Image 1 (tube, rainbow, N blue to C red):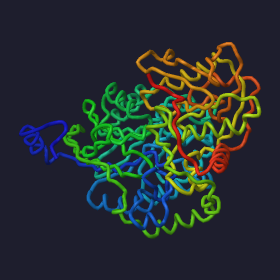
Image 2: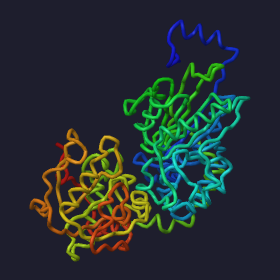
Image 3: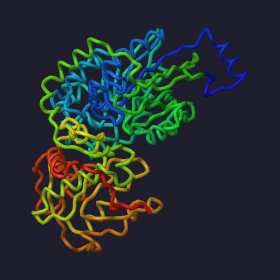
Length: 519
């Protein structure tokens, strides 16, 4: 493979001349695992034992254990790192919180990870318990945790590890809006990633470290901004946006690695479906002279480590009664893909929003709003189990009902499409209303044609709304709902409401009806 930084005879001459001083490192990486300890389907949700035996499933901890052993055997010098969001996504997290993630990451031999926003879903206490259980540093540079007793003396911004006789600087990065995305509590403040990273790079450089890797749970766009506006960062291992980078797939969002200046950015989609493998060659000055790599698909051709299969089966036993219960049937696959539900009306969004509205329609509620980021998987055709519903809606959110003016609803919709270009989770799936949006217009003026019950929305009129407690309390930027009138946040679990709606309307035929229009 030709160097991405030098090509042709010049590259060969330089690499040959520096051969004695070159240092080669294999960076193995994962991101956004979301408690997918068992194999998953092509829809990123549960995959049956029969399908797995037929080679139709992907990922799972047992495949990762095998793939890591193979990858390490190919390299005499490797590290394993994670780009955040090990937490949340299946019943395993609901039941074990971070304990099983810690056990599996220790087994796989991770060297470091960054804090993802979902690591704060159950507050600093659960994150601290996870950190106490793992054998490696957990990092976050762009936050002040000095006021949070659970993390103040434990959560570092960066660390130095040694591999193959060389020092490697590792820096953590988490979303700047984590306070809107999760539950870090009032004692932590988050800051701009560029300044935070540069500050740690400068400290590491002063210590004589010239090979620096950022573990970034901030998304592909932020990673490119950090690379462009900092000096001294060699590699960014990404997360948060579930970005798939590849040199061979037409479904990739960019090359693997994506080079911004002299910085190599990598990301390996999500859910353990790929293991990232980047081979980097540094010269004596700590500059990258060659990058070779590709995410490795964790498909049926990757054998499963038998001991890990047995351990996960043991951990799954208490969950089985809940997961295996058939609660509904669907005539076709229901699309809950990230790229669908964060960009347009999607069939899973319609079902969830309609289920919410149906549950409270006798309470004078006219509108339902569900954040697209709360929809975490699709469901394939046929029988629907509670386990599948909980994979789609894993956050244990409850229904919230409240009243706000039409003006506030329009403001909420503007927030919902304000980060459309980033694929942000705030994109609204709705029921009881229709709207149009135009992303060519400035943020704050993208929404038009808002109709409620077939009539144009009246800005001064009070409307009844149902959402989930996360959104009602300001999550995903919906701060305008915090001061709502007559708010009640303690309704039934959203997953239960959705399952019961699907059961009552089965077999479900997924539908799109034009409630959201992109101009």
